[in-house]
Length: 593
Image 1: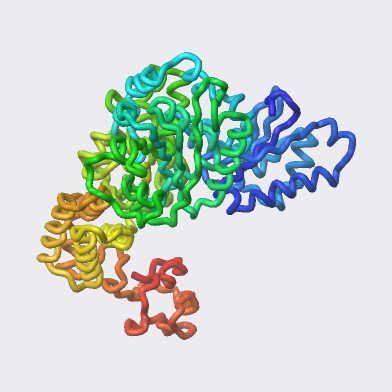
Image 2: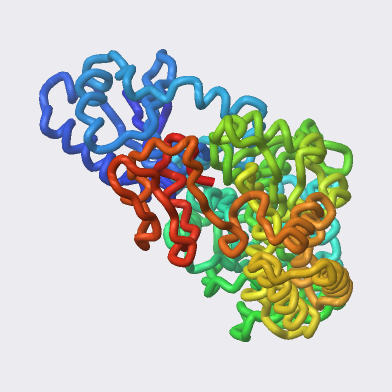
């Protein structure tokens, strides 16, 4: 819909928005306008548009765009708030001050460079026309009319883009390897198997701008000589799959997919393959086996997929964010792509910012931005002013936990790797002083151990052994020798595991041992958890000097472990206490420690 037509109301309806009731908000808007079906309503020409999530999670987000007027942003809109917006703003022309988002948008987007996410939250993800109006398919049109395949690959090389899915391998080089192979069949695979806890970059792009990924795959197909593409997406992303299917159908109907695209003699097909949610299938050789109908298990490399991949044919595998960058590079040129970033880490990177920060959501920043600038810029700083920053987990469950001293680390592939963490696909989980670093390492090792395919002994046996040691430490049964054994196993697995999952799985332990050794020592020598997280190492007591004798703690206790009578101090039966913290949360006098 053209920006000059009437009033447009944009409602964010990605997974986040729908979970908050965005569909009901839209229904209420339509119903309220229908109820006021008068001459003023008709003259207004109000158009409602469903868009993807914009990145900041304060749902439901509603933006009102009127020709010649400043954009008005509302957040946390519920069906009950719609009537006032319709009456006072859409029909009356006066924004509802009570519901305005305020300056949170400016703070969140300041310092960002939104390229991959430019269309997310701005266009209807199911509208090919809107995608084209915003520069969509200009890249594909350019290469089919002006460039030979080798020239396309050269532009991607010159841009310096590296894979955004984890390892950071140069994308143009990967394409060149596949292009050189003489084979009648070649494949392009979009890896949308986003399995990291706390990561939602790929999901949001597929929900908010699916045509960009399809165009990127088509350009990759032209450059490498591939004629078939597959999007491997986890079944836990139903909305992404729904919108992707719709985009593929529309692209076929409009001749942007299929035989003789744009009547230039290039043919390319795309199909969807749904994964069952195995974390190991994010590893490219496991993903290939899954598409082939086999159990997702990695195989040794070489040969690499670019030489021998899907069905034994040359195959290029790029993740969602990498492919969404391709149309931008072709449309604007490699020089434009390099206007942000660093020499060996060009362009932008999307991060899923989660944890103990004020503003959680998707952040797209230039490579070279520091971790501090992300957390205290778009992230808004720590969620609670009383609990300071302690660590940030970079790179998902196979990443590393970095302390305060690493906050000024540049976000680029080399600098992050030097810290012991990895860039990964872009997860960034912020932790405060209430986090136990031993327990967090145990959580991530537990995740990777359960997700191991079991093919190689280092990963299958080693991770399980590490988990048992960590369990012992947090239960108060650990010793100094356990810490030594934990590090030995971590280094051994890192060197000998078959695939990338096993090679990087020990990172949370290695980084917490490196940056937070005192927490491990206190757990095993003093049998105490400094963060008061590990239940077996916690004993609760009530300090009489602070107790107000109110009895709220007794009411909050789910197991009746607290005795209290009116006018008397409360006491805790340690044999019954399950260390659930309910009493601490209701006590306003800091009487329980």
